[in-house]
Length: 142
Figure (cartoon, rainbow, N blue to C red):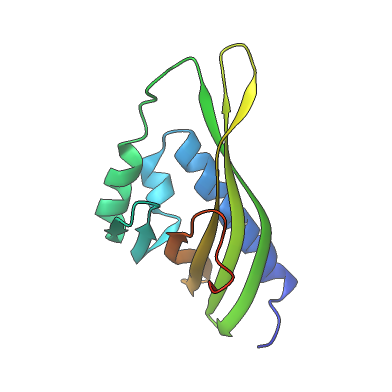
């Protein structure tokens, strides 16, 4: 496999959207379900959360906003996919968190990059590893 087929690209875009909406809407079970059962999330601080329970607990810690006068939205762009084999792809993208205050003013809260591996299990693409790569992204990543 040299290029991702369009159906896989669309499903992986849907996975990125499901990940963002679940996290931003405070649905930790749905967010953890975007990962494989042994999936890993590496945050910007270098902490690693592995497996469904640790992933769910991590997302749950963000489910109650610290300030109910604002909302956060994850935005993903510049997605690249590189097939590793028929059931795995390397995924790189940029990410941004936009905070909207009570008066409707949007502000960039953070910008980052992701260096991921997605795996097809049970016919569905899921994150096997999601690593916040930091900003600016290193050209050696990927």
